[in-house]
Amino acid sequence: MVSRYDIVIVGGGLAGAAFALALRDTAWRVAVIEPNPPRELQEAWDARVYAYSPGNVAWLKGLGAWDATVRSQPVYAMRIAGDDGGHLTFDALDAGLSELAFIAESRRLHYSLWQGLRTAGNIESIEAETSGVSWGTTEHELILADGRRLQAGLLVGADGAHSWLRAQANIGLTVEDYQHVGVVANFETERPHRGTAYQWFRRDGVLAYLPLPGKRLSIVWSTTPDRAEVLKALPADEFTSRVAEAGRHSLGALRLVTPPQAFPLKRRRAEAWVRPGLALIGDAAHTVHPLAGQGINLGFRDVRLLAESLRAAHLAPGDLGRLQAYALRRDEDVSSMQFVTGSLKKLFASEEALLRWLRNTGMTLTDSQAWLKQALMRHAIQ
Ligand SMILES: Cc1cc2nc3c(=O)[nH]c(=O)nc-3n(C[C@H](O)[C@H](O)[C@H](O)COP(=O)(O)OP(=O)(O)OC[C@H]3O[C@@H](n4cnc5c(N)ncnc54)[C@H](O)[C@@H]3O)c2cc1C
Image 1 (cartoon, rainbow, N blue to C red):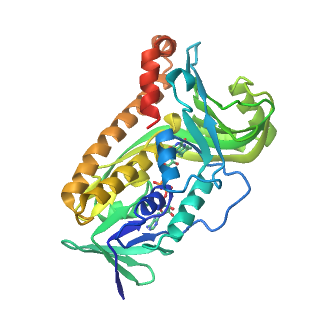
Image 2 (image 1 turned 90 degrees about the vertical axis):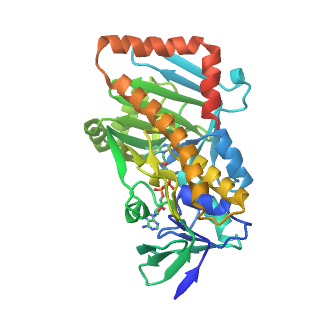
Image 3 (image 1 turned 60 degrees about the vertical axis):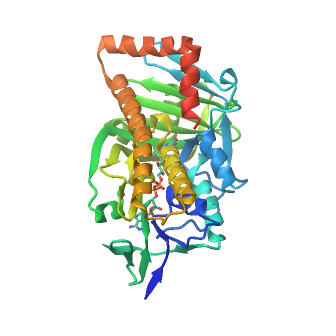
């Protein structure tokens, strides 16, 4: 049996689900294929906690997805320290902003996005595995593992860093192993964080403290694979005291709430974002070091632009000119973010005394330039 849609989205993670929801209330018939959709709201804290830009949060609010389900903490200030006295502080008030970012769990936002798309009249969610795809001239066919066939003018790859659809379209990938693993965990803190995020650039990597609602905190410690292995294997109390010590006891004593999980970190970039009848969004198109907290923020900016330009065009969703314009604009944003995060990671990994001096001095110098800090903040809030 063949079912016809206008747009079929492969992958219903944060990017795919948000894209589907951004197409609600259109005349298009949309399908989202996701083998593991979120089923229930969980009370336990999720170790996958991200920083979301105010621009993306405002947009998610417009979709109705950033609601009371999402337990979020605004960030009012950010304190960054180098490995040899360098320091840099960002303050929302100084830039005339109400907040610099919001910190929230991935799982709850994912659930909320799915609640929205499940109730949208023009969106069908299909819990299935994919097995094949055939590319036509204007219509393309996706074959599911249970034999169902779905036809559409546009297939959207939102199936993550190891994208199956990207591979089916023979789109290559450039990959750089950062030689870092991100260790994440949540803690309760003795002292209130007052909406401040912290980041320490250390010789063994980068440690971030992200404030969660209440006296809670999520960490991302990006470090070498060997050190990450050691950290993960430590007994809970020892791991906790390493995190407190590396964070200079800024929030007093810590208590581990969710055990550490580790994620290998790689920079990836698809060699093409679009092909006739295909567009890639989110991690399927790019991944980036989490030190700037930008991975899904870039993904949501892909979603915003693709959905807005498709909605505005009054053209068939698969119109190649429209897709190419999307690819061109998004590639710029992603390339500059990959360049900045990659360079920072390399700059702080070096043992050279001159570079150590340079990076710490550069940080402190940036701190004294109000205009530069404002420019950096204005870019980060989009
Ligand atoms: C340690 C760490 C910290 C991070 N911190 C931040 C942060 O602070 N801020 C930030 O913006 N980003 C952050 N990120 C990045 C963020 O995690 C990712 O960018 C985001 O999760 C990507 O979402 P996605 O929907 O594109 O992909 P995914 O979350 O990978 O979703 C892909 C979906 O596709 C489905 N799928 C896979 N294959 C198929 C198939 N063949 N058919 C159908 N469905 C399929 C999967 O089941 C999945 O649901 C961080 C990442 C790491 C590792």
